[in-house]
Length: 219
Image 1 (cartoon, rainbow, N blue to C red):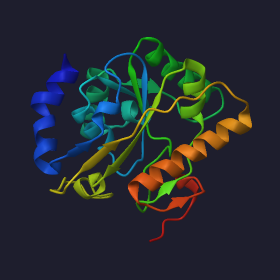
Image 2: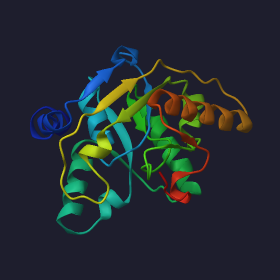
Image 3: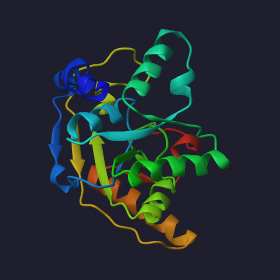
Image 4: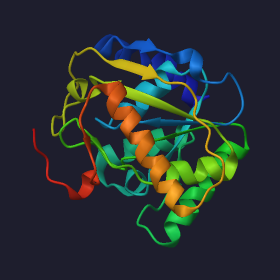
C-alpha cells in the first residue's frame, strides 16, 4: 500500500513537478513476468524516477547503509525503504555478493521487476562507467529479460552535494529487452561490457572502461 501511496500522492507528484519526465520506449517493458531494469546512475533519486514512470512495481536491492544511517535522515530512509518493500542487502563483497544475487533472483522468480544500476554507484561526471557483472549473471540464472534504460537530467534535479532538489528536465528512455542464455565467465564479462556500451551509445555519453568507484572524476 505504501509503495503506491508514495508514488501517486506523497512523493510522485513532487517528482513530476520538478522533473517533468519525458518517457520513451515504455512499451518495451513486458506487462507481466520477471524483468530486469538496468539503468545508468546519475543521482540518488534515479530509482524514484524509475518507480514513478513504470506502471508495474519495481524492487531494488538497497544497501545496508540506508537502514542503519543515524539521525532524522536515516530514520526517513529506513522507513521509505521498508514501507516500499526494498530488499536490504550487504554489498561489501565476498559471500555478500552471492546473497545479493540470490535476493535478486528471488524477486524475479516471483515474477517481479528487479531494478539495478550496473555501475554500482553514481557516475562522478555523467559518463557511463564499467558495469558489475551481477546483472548478467542473474539474467542468465533466471532467464529474465534485461531492459536497458537511459536516464538524463536527474543529476540536475538532485545535484551531488546539494541538500535541496531543483527544477530540471528529466528524460527516461527504455530500450528493447535483451536475453542472455547461460554462458561461461568470460562471456558474462563481454555481455556486461556490451550492455554498458549500449547504454553509453543511447545516452550519447562517453564510456569509461573503469569502475566509477575507483576512477577519478574528470570532464
